Amino acid sequence: MLALDDLQKDVLEREIRAFVKEVADPEARSRYATFLQEVESGEVSEEHARLLAGLLEVVLESGRARKLYGPAGENSLISLFQKTPQGSALTQQANEVNQALKGIEDQVVKKMSFRPSKPGSWVLTLQTDRCELTLRIDRREIRVDNLGIDLA
Image (cartoon, rainbow, N blue to C red; front, side, top):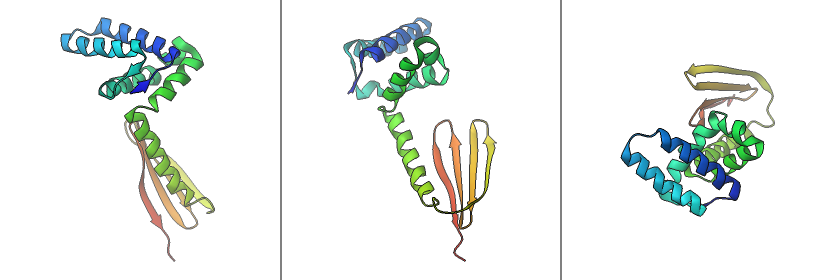
């Protein structure tokens, strides 16, 4: 269960109600009605955690959270997103990338490049005096794509 604070509850209730008004599919409306009941109770079940994460992604990525609820509302929703399975997975990915970056902390960076790979995806390459590290970054993940070590 994900516990909601008063601000999160208020924002989510508004967002779900606004979303449900636009949904024509009766099955989806029913699913969101159950989800809304959980939000109103202040706890979201694991069953609805994916719906919660999806809603938070839209509200946060679109800028709607900051525009309508200000920095405090946005930060509260970011904190909540990080507690969802999707948010936890992103945090884990960031931790893995940070581990890879620790491996080059004391090396001399010779070259850095950042380039688009495909729509919504980028590649960051760091070349040091002892290795080359390539990170792939897109909307869903950040990961170490390649690590080449100069053993010479």
